[in-house]
Image (cartoon, rainbow, N blue to C red; front, side, top):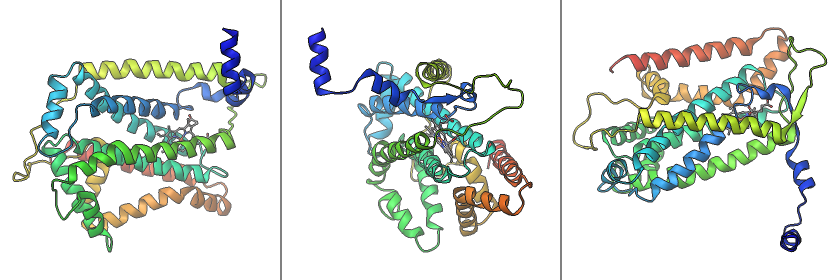
Length: 349
Ligand code: HEM
């Protein structure tokens, strides 16, 4: 055994002490609470997505003639296919919810402020990438809403001034939905976007490691309260426990509310109601409230403000140090998002 260990050590000259030093950075005590260490939750769900996605890819066939039938085969005939498909769908929903909650926590605790502005912007790219993975994923089933959702999405891109036509063509691989569209969505969903997300996460976590997480002191914390604890094994165990709870939640949701299939895509029959997934309700309602180009441009402007918010906030704090503008802007933004989402959820059209 010791001969084997020294053989291995010669080839991988990493000592346990070095490994400890690399991973065992002290973590501020507030990270013991889920709300404060929420970043681990979407990371965990992303791993579930990759695993279940690879399993589904063994059976999924990305062409308009075969996609729907292959998803039906996975759902009804492949051993535990229904379970893996449901896990993939629920983990996607929870991942998007977790990314949004994490961003809300970062926003309202001011963790995006100097020197973390760039990491906030990387985070915004992560959010957009996650949403597009969701959008392309729902288009793969080739049911009515997949087809019409993709068509509506492409028509919305078309209203962007100057580059709209190009965006639509890139998205659909042509002027309208055709044989090449579904394979294009598949390659984006299963290769390009996950690889981009991995790259963004490496930069995100790298920057967190370089800066360390923001330190907070709470008023009700006694002075002799320890301010830090070890990453390994203490924080590792917290994350492991969160992972276990998430796994139980995913299994329960997938079993009680398994993924169903809607009617197959019919390019000749527009459905009476076209609704995207819940995470696009806000965008959809916004598009219904304003006309094409105005809606798209105003939305682009809001996303741009979100990207550069740390700099706007820095400027406001310099000019009006006591204004708490970020809290009011955040509350207004949250009220708008929740209001538009609930509105869209409640109405048929
Ligand atoms: C898959 C998506 C994401 C993952 C896996 C992730 C992961 C993490 C992790 C593990 C942390 C350490 C603190 C914590 O656990 O809360 C963190 C912190 C941070 N995240 Fe994310 N994140 C994601 C998305 C986002 C988004 C969408 C934003 C904002 C737009 C963002 C901005 C930040 C910032 C600024 C920090 C530093 C917080 C501090 O210093 O306290 N992240 N992230």
